[in-house]
Amino acid sequence: MPTSNAAIKEDAIREQAYLIWEREGRPWGREAEFWDRAAAELAALMKRPRTAAKAAPKAPSISASAKPAKAKAPAKPKADDKVIVDPPKARTARGKAKA
Image 1 (tube, rainbow, N blue to C red):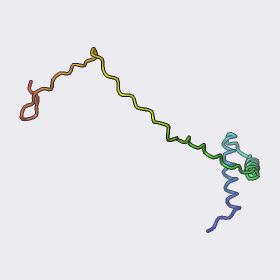
Image 2: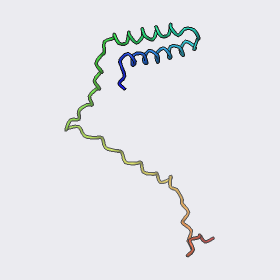
Image 3: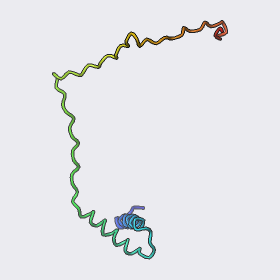
Image 4: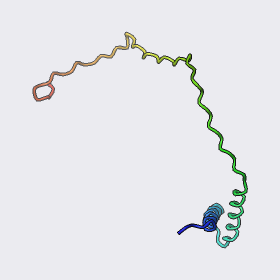
């Protein structure tokens, strides 16, 4: 079943009126006011001229003469920063460490 433009417009007004109703604190008895405000807001949106989307900025071009920066080598530990590690314990044939 094709959807008519009037039905689409009515759905849009209904949704906008609901948003206005919620924003106003959900008062009772003001349905016509919210419907009229929603219709006016949507009509104003339809009359506004559409602006062209701004083009994304271009990435800077990389010239052939530009060289990539070299990565720094990790700093070497100082002599007094040595870490003492216990040697691994000997293992038996069963895979358990000897005490």
